[in-house]
Length: 208
Length: 251
Image 1: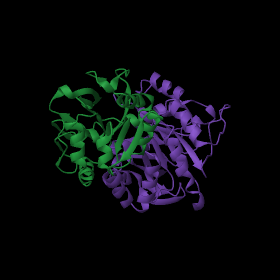
Image 2 (image 1 turned 90 degrees about the vertical axis):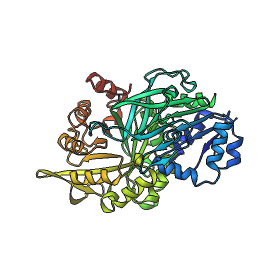
Image 3 (image 1 turned 45 degrees about the vertical axis):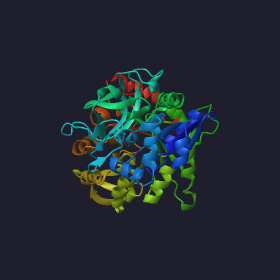
Image 4 (image 1 turned 30 degrees about the horizontal axis):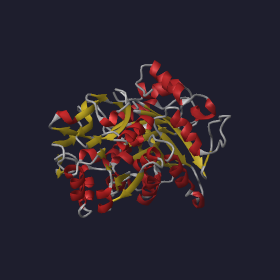
């Protein structure tokens, strides 16, 4: 099996690469590339993302044909894709970080700044927070409710259809931190930095 | 609920730990990779390396340490010490660091903070503020605490927040190495003036100091070095103690 981590200059992806290689061992081939043919032929795709919504969308668009290839992979061919952090946020129709920017439009909704309640909550939301699993997700196999995951973000994904939400986390409000829509998965937290429990989520995705 | 973080820090010089954990079963007590793994297995919420390598020819040793650690520890890794340029930050991130802490360069050349947070995202830019009390204010020191800049620490903290820093690592130079506790007044003051998380550092001698840093200093995270060395306390013991004092921690 081939799992491709999309390398599109979205910032630091070495931790994502290290964690997937740790879980995959020699059983699964982990590719790190922006090569369109390799993405097309892979079994699963991981879409990481760091920095701002706009910078990630711009970086995706700067690689000719990449957005079309990802659309074909996830929407037409319905193959499994995992978005992490801004990778998840880009599923939305639109994001408001820096300036209003169009997203991939895979899951209707918007990405807006977390309400800090007049400074009561520090932003970025950095550190370990518990996830509240509100709906079974395939990537949560053997993951206990209220497990701790590592977060670092200031913006949140607000999907229109709440049925796609598999988990939330409590920080000023119930922030969406995991979604599943058919073959499309996303986590706002960083499984690659969430210790053994995070590696289990990666393992679940690889074994889908 | 967001948990308060405990961050053990290792001083690394020429690729070796300077003051390490003195575990009998350690094959190599000076190996930062092995020590970081013990911390992360023990429940450390993050790991911090402070590179104190003095000579330029040995500066590259830290990259090797970071690369090896990031393949074994799957919690966030922060690296500081001698970070001067966008290129330095880029190299550390590529080796597997999750965050980079900038100290002297942030004072001498604040554009580094602005540029790097734009380029790599605020989430990976930590500004390390070394401050010392002078009368009724605190002043910024650079070069590992040797140079007094006379810059007001509170004003500087606000400026760094505006420049895009994701977190501030605040060290009291009066307390560093004394083991008498954090400068609570400094932590509380900076924490109340800014809206990004503060990591308290400098002066921890016992577990009550960690409690004070969070409860009185309003720090989001507490960093400590020597109390975790020589097995005085384990990270696990520290977390259980904080938990018993009603502080939310990841256990």
